[in-house]
Amino acid sequence: MRTYIGRQQAISTEDFAELALGTPVELWLGVAGETDEERAAREDAARDILADSPELPDDLVRIAAQVIEENPDLFDVVPLVRPARRRRARKGAAA
Image 1 (tube, rainbow, N blue to C red):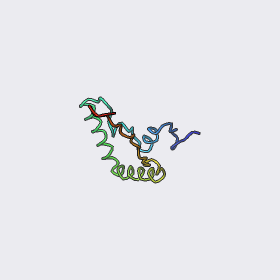
Image 2 (cartoon, rainbow, N blue to C red; image 1 turned 90 degrees about the vertical axis):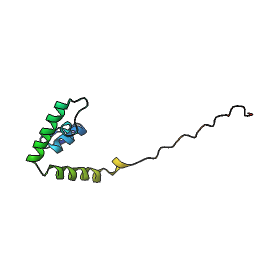
Image 3 (cartoon, rainbow, N blue to C red; image 1 turned 120 degrees about the vertical axis):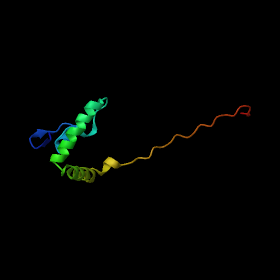
Image 4 (cartoon, helix red, strand yellow; image 1 turned 135 degrees about the vertical axis):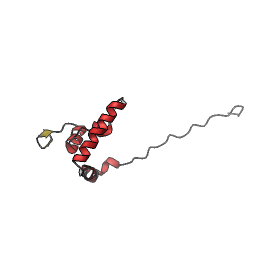
């Protein structure tokens, strides 16, 4: 099954996020190994986008709330069972 948002096909979760935001996720989160200069340029671009679209943060919160509401299993927490501790024999103790 193929999923489209508008005329764009969303193949991965990154595609969904980018189409919902209208910008690449990396613009907001950064990328590993970016230089200080690249980070400054990315943050300048993000500031420009926010200046042009002041409603964007509210839209993002609304999208996140909708995703959480539609996918409550995203936050299912399953307790992990700890294995029983092995007791060590003490030195000099009779076995």
